[in-house]
Image 1 (cartoon, one colour):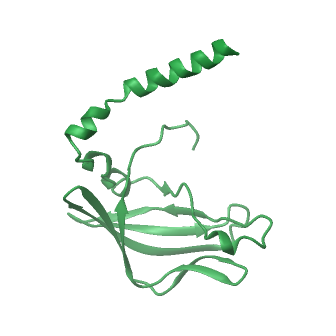
Image 2 (cartoon, rainbow, N blue to C red):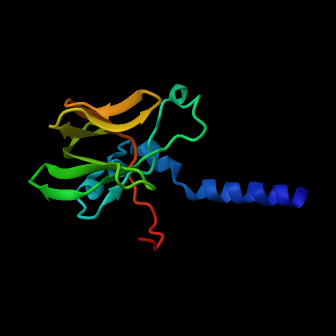
Length: 156
């Protein structure tokens, strides 16, 4: 058991040593890790990895139906990308909703912002026990914390 613990600490030390943490101290500009452009400008469909739902809305539900959220590329100009926002149930494809959004990236000092412009009316993403999660006709601005490609699993 002691050998296993020693090996674990050794593996953790090697992993930590392989990170050049001093680079972050010398160069606090993380913009190269915060550029979502390669994702929003891609011609491929983009799937949302996780949809967060406030915990209090799921307390009385044994297994909430979390929808699949996908975005498809439509067109672009110099600084804007037109995409769809599609919401559907993976088991019941008749419950399919779609709307169009415009995405722009704005780089500021030490931060990157993603602006989402939705020109339609309210767009329902999901409804759990009378609590509706929707996009209004307002514009949204999100701070991009990290943007990286996931390894391709070979599945389509």
